Image 1 (cartoon, rainbow, N blue to C red):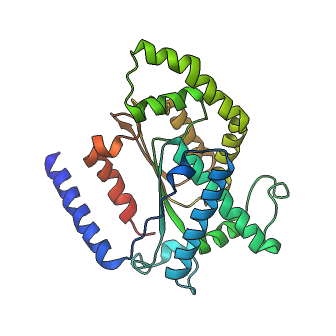
Image 2: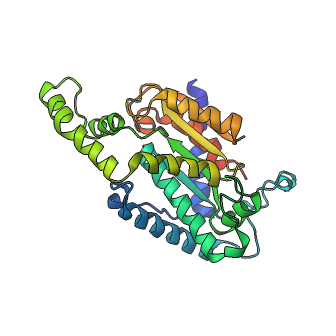
Length: 284
């Protein structure tokens, strides 16, 4: 109702003002070139660059005596005890952003394997799993304490990529000339790019990295539209079920937005804020 929305808006404005007074906020955004060349060395170099920027920020602002640990004892701590500590919130948009985040996780993992080789056991030796102690060691360096996923994830698909380009350029579906050009030129080129860069295998590997490397207690918020033509709702639903029921993730969802791909915040701002505000403001 209107009164509730006004209250949420006022609370959000007040929280924003408090955060500006209390926290030093820095944005770490991947370059356009790094984002637009998936499954290539350019993307890998950009993931490494973002990782080092995050490491630099963590070293500057983190308390060296504090360990970001998600063990069972944290629930007994005073909820305001860590109010002024810094944290990293990843806000991921679309499949491309999701794959980039997974590649970033892999870069972080490899960095720690090289830095602490005797403290880590290989994936094959562990039977495909990683210990919570190893997760916590990563969190101590880059405390990705919250993850927001907007309009993702789904399996890699050339048709979805075409739909994404259509949405980005606002290309109509009923233009016969454009449809012919897409079917005869764009689709084969995209399929060639995916094949040449081993895209399908790489995307499956990156999605598995999310399952393996994201700490099970890191809160996740997933937002999606029922009318998304790029990322199919049934794939998002299956992913959420797996995360909740098989991997026991702490995941909240709102999958009922009524808008185009990655248009949730602009089209339904108040609904977005109703999901976003309690999620980001809740103490760890």
